[in-house]
Amino acid sequence: MIDLPSLDPVDAAIAKLGQSLSTVESHILPVVDAAGFVVAEDIRSDRESPALDVSAMDGFAIRLGDFLAKPLPIAGVAAAGRPPLSLPARSAIRIFTGAPVPNGADTVIVRECSRELNNEVDFEIDVERIQQGQHIRKRGENASVQHLVLSAHSYLSAKAMASLATFGPPHISVYRKIRVSIINTGDELVGMGEKAEAWQIRDSNGPYLEQFLRQQPWVGEIERRSVGDDPVELKECILDGLARADVVLLTGGVSMGDYDYVPEMIRQSGCRIEFHRLPIRPGKPVLGAVGPKGQMVCGLPGNPISVAVTARRIAVPLMRKVAGLPMADSIRWCLPAPEVSIASIDLIHYRLCNINDSGECEWTPMMGSGDIVALTQSDGFLELPPNYRSDQSAEKRYRFYPW
Image 1 (tube, rainbow, N blue to C red):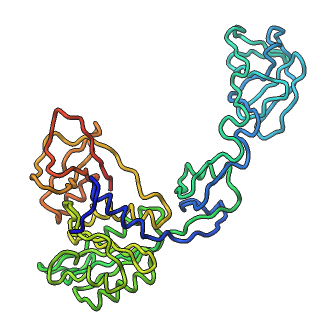
Image 2 (image 1 turned 45 degrees about the vertical axis):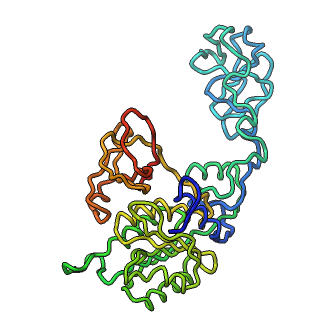
Image 3 (image 1 turned 135 degrees about the vertical axis):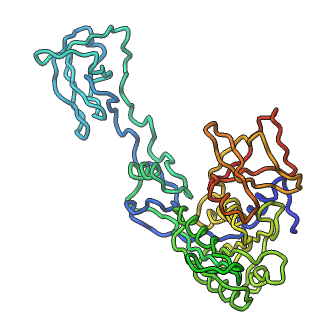
């Protein structure tokens, strides 16, 4: 096992490999087509927000100094999408939310405190309850010109697209979506839906990984294939994956058995292994390598839960680096269930669990790392330290990784 510093050897392994990985190239897209991509440049506001003083409410725009001269004649209507009007002396202008505040006005009185009669407006509110500037959104109060709206390496989600639509240029630079090659290894595998003898296994890792990756919006093309325990054929698949993809994920064949050819074939394919075997359960045999052109190569163990855990905990942060994103992704900090039955092991433990209505983790019944039923019934897993024991007097939270 490669010695890795720091209190968290998993984070250390991810950081070590991440330093060697290449990020995919960027290209220019019309801003209207950019949703779902990762932006490759800082986006700054091209104008102030708001671009001028606007009303925050429906009501009447006045000069506060004219309030005592009420009722005031209604001199016009200010609506959103129209140039600002000018407010005559001792008058009011009816105004709608988002409309430019008329030149000369300094206060908006809401419609609920107003009474209209014969094209005049009276106000049913004491002057002491009015503040100059009330219900006016000031020019530039949200953002000034050249304010940083979106940082480079941000994912263009729905909320990001709102900012991009408001402030962005007509074209922007984005990273292309990454290409992934999935290689499932083992003579025992048969395809999804095929008849399986008792000594065979229907491949669940391939369909799981494909669908899991399709949930990552920055992933583009995915190809998937199966290969038996044949080193020559395996090497050909790895080389083909490296030629066509940015990320190559393999399942099975990474341990110490006679038919575990994956580590050696990865080396023979021109890749440099950065870590192999980590102090974790499940998933200890996991392998991480960098390809000749900075591609990410990850050998995941063969058991389904090991695949799911190592894909979520290790592969996803590294793939984010390739996609142009920060490696850290969203996790939660959760309280573990009070009852626990974890053996005293000197390994980081990934425990399948569900989140209850109180936000606490409840352990998912599980018979081992091949228990697909437990995987299906869980919400994710909690990362527990070596030799963890439940302490009901403590309120310590641990990292929860949702599927």
